[in-house]
Amino acid sequence: MENLRKSVDKLALEGDLTDDEFLTLLSADESIDEYLFQKAAAVRQKHYGNDIYIRGLIEFTNYCKNDCFYCGIRRSNKNAERYRLTREEILLCAKNGHDLGFRTFVLQGGEDAYFNDEKLADIVRSLKEKYPDSAVTLSIGERTRESYQKLFDAGADRYLLRHETADIAHYNLLHPPEMSYENRVRCLKDLKEIGYQVGAGMMIGSPYQTKEHLLADIRFLQKFKPDMVGIGPFIPHHDTEYKDQKAGSLKQTLRLLSIIRLILPKVLLPATTALGTISPAGREQGILAGANVIMPNLSPKTVRKKYLLYDNKICTGDEAAECISCLTRRVQSVGCRIKISRGDAKK
Ligand code: 5AD
Ligand code: FES
Image 1 (cartoon, rainbow, N blue to C red):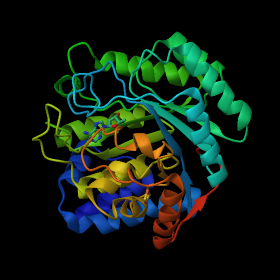
Image 2: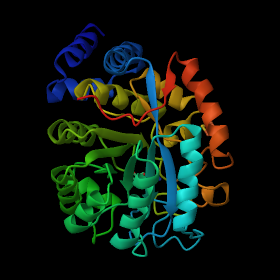
Image 3: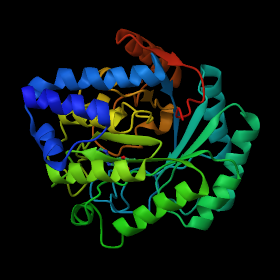
């Protein structure tokens, strides 16, 4: 326990540990958690005060050409009811969101060829024209560098693309042979070079994940230095290869949130919907462990239940306005407040 505390102190002070120290921390029992969470929350507080940023998520298509083994909208899931929002529906989601105080819109979707560069660039341009005070984030998977460039030129500010795992063999256990870790990292590097604020990340407790894999993720994040890191527990989806695998734990996810806050002190770190799904107060606990972003759903209620990456996803029956009042309460319950702003990372 003494040694663990020393490790946490060192991590908070220097933002780094040796491999052995990280592995020991990742395997430690719960008694260290409160101490770790408090250190991480103090660093969040130092850079962001009590402010929690909100992002309006618009899940605009669940068509996907990919077949990631863990994901409920993978192409071989014939039971998924597919949908696409129209340009007008997307703009309407954004209008509702803007009225509610959102100043970041996240366009998230499967890898859907219907939304080619031209269509997407047009949507991004319209959003930026109508809401010049807001940021547009894209979360639409792997594309060519040229495509990323076009969308950036159309005005997109940020891009979320989780690396999923920084271990090649593990990557190949989670993805079909036509996907590669190499291309994933190529995408992330292109996005950064083009000038996007970039988000990487991984699931916690994904099938076959070991402590060593998590250490590789930590090293990857330290090296790549993303502006945002999205992590959440793996949760099985009943129509996937991995339906019988165990879900990731609340405890390990919170621990990783704290570690990430300490290695990348100014990172934008969401308490994800998946975290709120495995535990009723998961997102609040995420904030207490160092998270500073929440991403509620702005998609129309009619499609919410169709964008199911995993089972039992929360908030699929609520209007955006209901989510906001619910979140306002939740954020206040842990001594923070929702900040109405673009919420860029502090430099
Ligand atoms: N459980 C938790 N997270 C998942 N994702 C996909 N499927 C699942 C699942 N079953 C995550 C992936 C992806 C992000 C959009 O959602 O990490 O990058
Ligand atoms: Fe959506 Fe609570 S955040 S209902």
